[in-house]
Length: 269
Image (cartoon, rainbow, N blue to C red; front, side):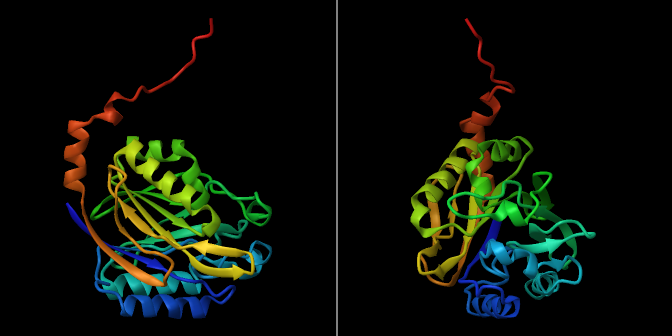
């Protein structure tokens, strides 16, 4: 199946949801093909990376500006929406770093709460947010998609789970630091190769403070880990078409997933 993808890469205005929605609108209006099968936005594109103020930016899911904007987007462009992430509350629970997924008609398909929170190198995401409870594969009209957010990329077990459960595409939405971009690209290639799967990345770009820049470099990798389309650090929309039939044929020729053991144990001597 041929699938049209549109990836947004932007520089978030910290704490200003309305301005960031305007940025997304402009990127879509200027993109080559907004009427794609899937539109993907970056992690925390609505508020930026600002751990100490996450709880101040929190919204309730169904009444949030983010949800209502993404709903309009899905209908306007007849696209499945993988809505990056924002800080949301659900049913009065603690705030989470949450991705909203909508179908082409703007119906809520599901939400994914970031499974691994990043609280290292001077950052404190886990101090202000609650981690997700479960991985998530969503069924869309163009295939099964495994959802992940930023730091999740470092945990291969998550992506192996997606591959074993029939995912056609893995999406990772990130607010990744520029100083570690080589690690991100290497990890993205590894996740694609070891699971024989398309890997889609949507990252924030731009400056947060005098010492912290986001990486940009949103990209689309094929099931052999080859970068088939990529941005640098500009604010832009990245369009690409992929073919999952090619991927499935390759899996027959090189049956790595089939040859993987269900359990690996050490035998002590």
